[in-house]
Length: 95
Image (cartoon, rainbow, N blue to C red; front, side, top):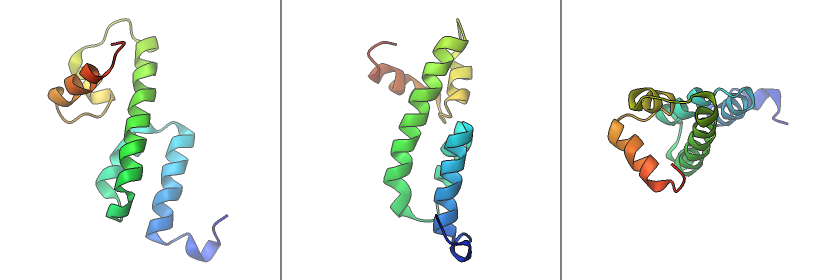
């Protein structure tokens, strides 16, 4: 547990918020957190979380939607371009 007096530290707060977003299933907030990281030290963690979250979102999309437009998938998976989505899909074996 983090002592109360350290909870306002921006580095600790950031990680606690990430944990909360994951527990809530607020994956869009996890993906958006990369843009407001308090330090580049978190880059590796956020890259891995981003990949994990996208895998989770993709598995949910697969079950929830019989069909999905590219634009919708791009938005739901938080890709900034259609090319990024296409590259992501190309790397997957079972898509």
